[in-house]
Structure formats: structure tokens, C-alpha cells
Length: 251
Length: 211
Image 1 (cartoon, helix red, strand yellow):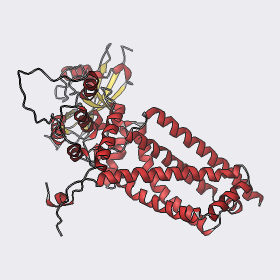
Image 2 (cartoon, rainbow over the protein chains, first blue to last red; image 1 turned 90 degrees about the vertical axis):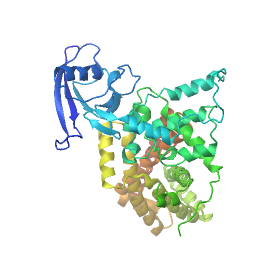
Image 3 (tube, helix red, strand yellow; image 1 turned 180 degrees about the vertical axis):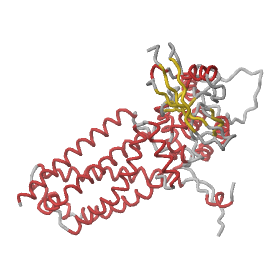
Image 4 (cartoon, each protein chain N blue to C red; image 1 turned 30 degrees about the vertical axis):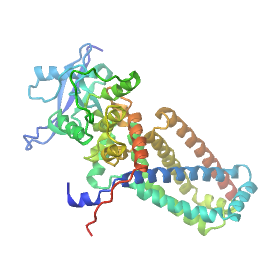
């Protein structure tokens, strides 16, 4: 196994140089023990092609920077061992996110937009007292919140989602999971109607078509199906008992 | 914010559409499975099949049921069809995405939209054939099956496929049960209905040949 020669086919395109059409470039590399895609890409950049663009920070599945399409599936480069893959490995950047160049995409802008849209902060009327003891939370609630908080914002669920690929405004599993996290949080004082305003549309809870590529491709193995369904049921129940104010008409 | 979007914003439309898709879908799956069980009474005997059909006629259940299901089916096509990527570029994105991802549930959804459109046409023809050859009796059905068994074979497969994966997807979306077991259950039911349907078809074709 350790003396395989791997062939990498890597998507190359620099939006700064649109005159050069996107193409696939081939690199060859001898596999080493415990090699990940992250290690392989670094060796390619160091030994063969310093112009190759890709992202990484932590190399330990914490930062979520190195997500890319590896043989068709959105995965983390640092968490994907080459010995689980065939000799030919095809690498593409994640779709949906803004392409910076080659394998590098800007997930930050997307996630910031999502955070603002879902208002990802604890809405509270209480004034913070730095000297007071922190409010207690029961262990079960804390664990439930933590389960949703484990999201590393790598973008694999968004890239794998057919809806997100064709509907720009769709919040996707990452966004809906984020809403679930705040709905569980007893410190968040938002009313049901306020939550409905945030995700009670096809941009949120009702946009999901149930293809579950998010659930099947999440590198952190978050229970995304259950989070999406939880928000859908909750938001539907709120919506059925909720009276929005009447708007004005143009004609 | 844009004026036209601000003024047409409706808070609850998307919720109602989603619920309408769910309800009409469940109704149609319920109907289809019942329909196939009724058809399968031919496996017991011709008399059984005929008396069930006469019973449905006698209490006007067919006369109410058929138009009702036609309306629900058309309604479901419009509501669930809102999710179909209709622009050429969206189509290209979805096909490319499905080919890239090698993901079963994404492919089954692609075929669900295709079978949905196929059902609209095929079931329309089926309803036309049945209502113009009224009443439903074993002999009439046998003649129809003998001539058009290939048509019914296609309709059976696309119908059961769409219903089986449709109900699975709704369960997945609403999360009433865990995903894996519900997949097995819906697949098992679909397989049983398919077998019953094929067996009934075989009996009808035999019967048509003997007449």
C-alpha cells in the first residue's frame, strides 16, 4: 500500500486571470504511510508547483478550512486518508462558495451572511454583569446545545446540497442547525414569532427537499437530519398558531 | 429590500405550500396503495374483484373518489413541482451535481421529479381509458391489460417508485422516525405492492387471452 503512485487531478482556475480557462492539472506523488490529502497537497506545492492554491489552518478537523470535493464528495482534506481512496484522486473546490482560486474558496462571507440572517447571538434583555456568577444550565440542555455547536463551518453540507446549489438564499443545514442551537438555548429570549420570521420560509426550514447529502457528508457527523426536522416541525407548529400583521397593497 | 418583494412578502405561504405538498402526497400514496390492493383482489377470484367494484359503484365511491384523486394529483403536481429546477442552467447544475456526488438519495430525487412528470401523462391516459371503458369489471380490465400490458408495466413501476420514495422523503423531512429504518419499511412496502401489481397483471393478461 505504501508504495502506490497516486495521480492527482486538480481543478485549476484563477478568477484574477479569467483569460486562462479552467482546466485539470495532473500531479503524481508516491504515497506515504498515514498520508492525508492535506499532506499530499502540501508536498505537491512544496516539491512540484508553488502556484497551487488551497486552504488549511489546523490540519486536525477543527478549523474547517480545508473542505473540498474529493472524488466527488465534499470532505475535509486533513481528515481524508489517501489509503481510503483509489490511485486516481480528483480534487475540486467546493461549489456554492465564492471561488478564490484553484481549491480555495471563501466560506467566510457565506457564513457571516448566514450568521446575520439567523441573528446568531443570544437575544437577551438582561444587562451583563461581569462580577455576577454565571447562570447555571442543566447538563442535558448544555449537551444538546453543544451537539449543534460542534459545527466547524467547513461548508460540506452546503456544497453537497442540491437546493443550495441552485438557490442562493437557502440557509442550508449549517444555517438551520444554527437556528436549532438558539431555539434550544434558554438564555435566548426570542419569541416563537421572531424565530418564524427568521426561518419560516423556503430560504430556511421549508427549502429543504430532504435529499440528505448534508447528513451523509458532514465530516463532524452532526445529526443534521434530526436538526432540520426538529426546526421544520417547531417552525410549522409556530406558523400554524401565528397571526402576522396585515400588510399594505400596491393596488 | 425591494418594493415589489416587500409588498408581496407573505409570512405563511411557504409553510402552507410545504403542508399542502405533504398532505396531498400522503393522500396520493394512501390512494395508490389501496388501489393496488383492490386490483390485487383479482388474485383471489374474478367474483371478488367484480363485487368490490360493484360495491364501490353502488355507494358512489368511484364517482366521488376518481374526480377527487384527479384534482389532488393535479394539485400535487403544481405544489410539489415548484421544487423542480425549471431553468436550463439550474438543470445543468443539478445533473452535474448528482453525477459528481455519487449519492443515492440525490439520484433518487432526480428520478422522482422525472417519474412525477411521467405519472402526470401516464395516469392521465389510464384514467381516460378506464372511464371511457366504464364500468370496471374483470373482463374489461383483462381486455385492457392484454392490449396495453407494456403501458401498465411502465405506469406501475414509475408510480410505485414515486410513491415509495416520496413518502420516505416526507418522513425524512419531518423526522418522525429515524431515517434508516423508515427507508427499509417504505422499500419493503413498495416491493410488496410491486409484486402484487405484477401478479395481478399476469392474471389479467392470462384472463384476457382466455376470453
